Image 1 (cartoon, rainbow, N blue to C red):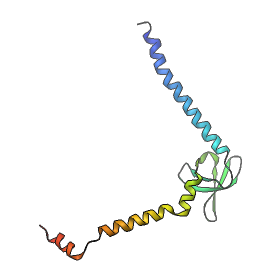
Image 2: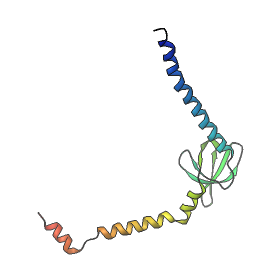
Image 3: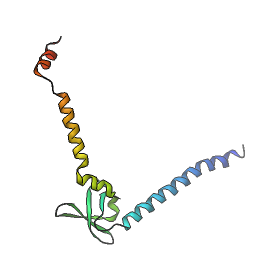
Image 4: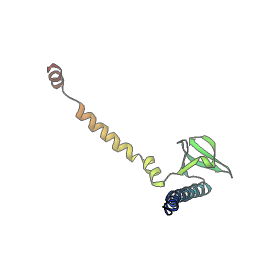
Length: 124
């Protein structure tokens, strides 16, 4: 019975300690990413806005969100830097081509002749 209380404390404190360490590691990783931003990086903000870094300051980042549209954000608002391969895939339109083919295939399978439509509508 005397050993139960210390074991209970250890059982509760160890997960808390490990959780705090993990959060601290994640915060350091995000802070280093925000400190290592450079002009031309494709980024996503915490609000989900995609943009390209066009100018940097100690505390702010200017993002181009559309052609000739530049907005200013705090560095802390940058959630992640987009990977280069994801950016090039989107800009080449590889995904758009495959989705267009899928839409064409789906449309072709959905179409039915007028006889099939009449048969389907007259069934009881």
